[in-house]
Length: 537
Image (cartoon, rainbow, N blue to C red):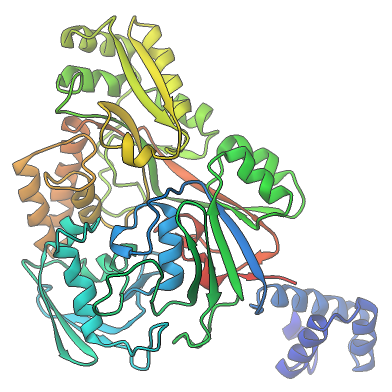
């Protein structure tokens, strides 16, 4: 039996019932009301259950929420172009908007853009929403789009997506609410690219990022880099459904146990990206639920190809054969991972090369390769940190496997604070931790092109660079997939990056937090949770 089976039950009755529930009416009072209205006892119980469920899914306004990520630094920024940590992404999503937004199913919907259209995927016409204002009252126009996109091309800005933005050869304002984006070559992915966090729109002429002046659902009230940030709801937000929370506070608790304990004690309502070792503790406590996202996040072991010992190709290949992927999946990550094949495109992506099999764990083959490289019995430092999720556990698994064949690895555990500026991309052998990206073009441009800003192993290949441009302009899916398949093979065999697994991201949250959904752009709803969640009273 459902609500529809109750004779003469109307949506007006349903609304009245939910309103009574919201006002705090007791179950006995509600049953009296239903019976007095001619509803049987059995049907009344069903109606109350349905109303309670509907009420739980109805956003309510108000409240202050505190959430904790795992990483921050004194280099935290409110400049979307320079954002690199999840804490940066959370702030950007709260204070700014993008032209487009990626939904939980990977589809693209318009945000600040009304439409984005092109006949040839090279020249794109962007129609903008009207009536949008920045926090300081300035009206949003196409001039802001021109300024926001073009600044990624200025080396002085230091944009993290400069290599991707280089395909933009011009942006001009056609009129106040129309912009034209011209690319160097066709790229059908442009609407998806514009959904990336870095392409948030800022006001024309902005150079001071000590505060955030965006169009977003929250205004920045407090910003203390490396400490905390507080946002207050923007009552002039252009979306009819404004943010539900009155305010939110975000900061990092790098230690996983401390982050989970803060959630269990009620000090915070969201503990993002908790380790598998903490999951059993979190899920055993009443009032705590888990939100799982498997969308391509990974922690990888990088050997720089321009430094010793990574400049010896046999060492790099030996390292990949020494990675016990099953042990990492089962032991280090408690099963919350999928085996990967040393390239960054996850199985959920339509361009994933399923024919490229992961290397099997083969210590004997690794030993022969290390011997050939002349490094066997040498001590090789591996830099790991809590900052790169599960990297210390992975390093210990590699160290143990190396000990069995006479290969010595010295795990140099360094603090989370400063890891991304002092060790990542710099140490000869170190770990990285890469957030999901929606397209192969973005992943390869950021991480593997010869001029990629985050080229972790300094992989350089003119052929790879040419294929990247060719795939970008190829509108035929099958032909494009064939190119990407070959590029995945090149990365797996030639780059110094070993990717053992794709990690499932698990956020632990209070059951009072409602509205949080998985998103392909990462945990915490692709870092955009602040705008969408609400606190159940």
